[in-house]
Amino acid sequence: MVAQLAGRNNQPIVFWDFTRIGFTLMILSLILCAVYVYVRYFVMQ
Image 1: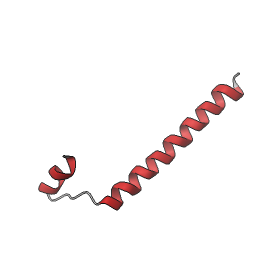
Image 2: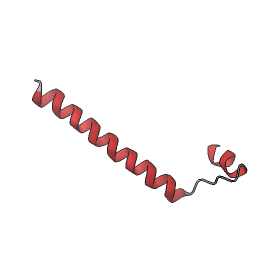
Image 3: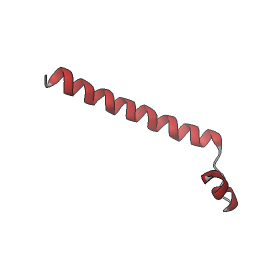
């Protein structure tokens, strides 16, 4: 739905741009969660 609205407004969402941004955000959130779990369960005990 969002892609259709963007296409109508001459702002197409290219799959590889979406994938590049989404993958980067996924990696950042995984790193953040891993740091939190490490600090919470191994440093602070």
